Length: 446
Image (cartoon, helix red, strand yellow):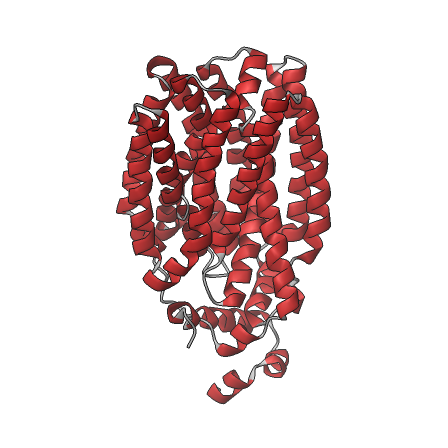
């Protein structure tokens, strides 16, 4: 018997055994590579944030204001990303986002080189747009792979992001130690990332080569191309609660991304490279839990795992903020990263259970993430200016506690995914075509 009976029970046997293993494996590894690439590009920028601050002579409050442009770009774009993905398809959405990312990182490199805050802000705004465009199709395609496999694997895709983030942090630390210019680093990242995305996207699972459950997605794209169809998810209470979980996770992870290395440098008087290494420890802990946590989710369920990990994140955050010494702060950062690992992938998995509505729901919960990125940088920057970076981070404890209260929203729904697929196919596919395509198990039931 499979190790995940709860998950397997939602899928008929013919779906579980249908996928072409080589094609599915290629799609899975390609998606992991794209998640890793996002982590590399993201962390290579964040690891050089102290250098950007010094090059432009910015205060903590001013840094928070500049970071606001990236969050604003994402917030404006992400509500429509699901509709865009339905209209042009995942592959073209990834291509479009990849081009936007390359332009963004060229601008981010030019900003400090030209001593121009507006150029840097423009680059961050474009990067926010690019991230919003990329985030939805990557999560949707990963959810498709998870449905085919019939077991929890979404945390592993997000682990790939974390692995890439470790690599990006180390890249940034090495570049800082070697004195590599910001323009040189970000130009290289822009070119390499564009080539990587354009080459990898052709390995996505094609909808027309999928079983009946993915023929639903073909029908959805032909019948639900208007933005209003995807925006309807904003009226669903469960989706909004999932958004709260993602909001807290985004505040937690985003605060670490933006302020952890700076907090270490300022509080303990260490070098920029040392601050980047502490951030790498945070991301490494997050990666390990995402790689190992999938088995725990299948064994114990989403809700208990989310509650336990949320409590660990809360304790780790408080420990980091109040630690009197660098070793204790590092230990707190590791606990913080470990606890923050699973909230987003579990929420994405919950939002993607119904393939008919996955695009709209994923867009909604990622909108909460973008809102968190919009609000947190300026508020934390203002607080950090008055009380210091680490004490300011304690404010993140409030949304983390709230997420613990609504953790039950990630519980897997009892609706039969296979029944959803059969109903949608019945609405979209002619009767003769349905009968010819019907698997043996369903013919017996009929």
